[in-house]
Amino acid sequence: MQSQEIRKKFLDFFEKKGHKIVPSSSLVPENDPSVLFTTAGMQPMVAYLLGQEHPKGKRIANSQKCFRANDIEEVGDNRHTTFFEMLGNWSLGDYFKREQIPWIFEFLTKEIKLDPKKIYVTAFIGDPAHNLPKDFESAEIWKNLFAEKGITAKEVEFGTEKRASEIGMGGGRIFYYQDKNWWSMSGNPDSMQSGEPGGPDSEMFYEFSDIQHDVSFGKYCHPNCDCGRYVEIGNSVFMEYQKKSDGSFAKLPKQNVDFGGGLERLIAASNNEPDVFKIDTLFPIIKEIERLSEKKYGEDFEITKSFRIISDHIRAAVFMIADGVTPSNTERGYILRRLVRRAVVHAHKLNMNDGAFAELAVVVVQTYKNVYSIDNKIIDIKNILITEIEKFKNTLDKGLKEFEKGIDPFVLLTTYGFPIELTLELAKEKDIVVDVKNFEEKFKKHQEISRVGSEHKFKGGLADHNPKTIKLHTAHHLLLAALQEVLGKNVKQRGSNITQERLRLDFSFDRKLTDEEKKRVEEIVNDKIKESLPVVCKELPKAEAEKLGAEMEFGAKYGDVVSVYLIGEENKWISREFCGGPHVGNTNELGEFKITKEEAVAAGIRRIKGVLE
Ligand code: SER
Image 1: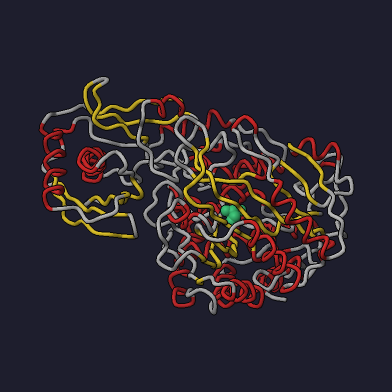
Image 2: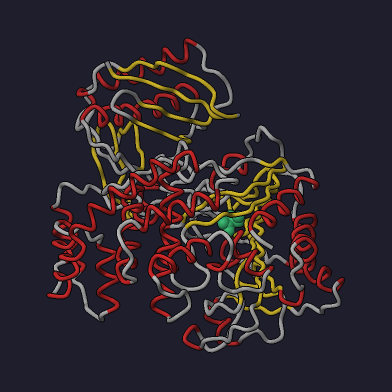
């Protein structure tokens, strides 16, 4: 079976079970400056998982475009890709484990005809420290489903992956893990933010029996082992908890299910083909690289790796550009630049010529044009790629020579355009040690490149450092504080966007604001401006910042040490927010604040636009 068929089978299957099919959201999250890309199908669904009503109802299914920057370096093996489509089905306070697990098993075994003997599953072992129980229920449901297929499903308790690799499969079918079977956007129960939803999950793995366990990944193989014998093909998250500010967990008002399964991995399993690059979504790109490079895929390990990197990165680049990203030195643009430049280095290894990327982009567009509207953007995509590649090509050879001579990664970056990650990768291939600390020091001083973004390095704050934008940014903090004063502390930020002309703040509130309320909010902001309050930034460990009660936008990821912007006199702050800045030094720099618009954006979410005059 190929991609069109499996995508359709999945959506049809869940449509028959009462789900509404929704289109994929953009790769660039809307109203959420805190994350660079959509990394999971659930990301655009958070507000609904927390209880807001979805306009389409309680059962939703889709195929979501996703991009995971932290997998860039994993690309090269037979199953990791940065861009992928995630098939998803959601219960928003409707069905739960007893419905979803049998359905997904039916989909896997009947619709795409996987041999149940090759399916292995996992469940949450529990976390006594957080008072989170073991998920006996999922295990029991799975046990019965396997029994119906004549399979006795033995349970094995692993806990950590380390322990799993020490004891091995032990004839098991259902395996209990700890952190591996807990899902939230920011990881395990400890690392979750207060307010964030999460829950135990049950994952499905397909066994590629032809792949022999590789002991470099651990003594014994187990479902979560990285050797490639067992590949995760689906994950049902039973999203029923929310983390509280005191670190404890409470049940959400309703139980939700978030299932996600990588489309290509499902196809790989259905064809018993462990190499996702041989799937019809990627193989045409591989074929085109064969034609352009006159080399053969699978010929040797290094060549195959380059084929995979080029095809993954060009596909991701095409989708990013189609969703409006352009190469730059910051944030999303930097990730795109990194992908393109890394692909160019690998194309260089295969002796491909300069024009190759435009041709590869055409193949990507052809492959997907019936699923996503990207073919109308092909001219832009090609132009952006060609310009970006031209820029880098001019310095690539010289840069590589410089690299051979002994590297200063800072010069490689600033003079030859080598992203630091690329230099580190080239150095690793040659066993050269790079002085990263020295690089970082020089880099900090370097004004031109303001921030290196990746989901994990996110610090929050503005990409545009124009004075007008900075002023609006400080006004944005005052506005949130004023809204809380007038409408209550329950008002939380749900999105934001600031340009040189105006600010936009999305916040949780369930009705239209009255004229008096709007007026009062404006007055409070303008009073604070007139009071000439200092704006200060403190770098604090996250826990301390949380103790201060600093506002954070839900869904945002923050590092261990965070910066908090405080407005007001010491200890009499009127605004406290996790934020990367920059801000003005004093509120008296702002001018007069005006609300220009107040409207609904979704159920329970209002949007205010405002300006400074
Ligand atoms: N959110 C879960 C995941 O990304 C399931 O969709 O794995």
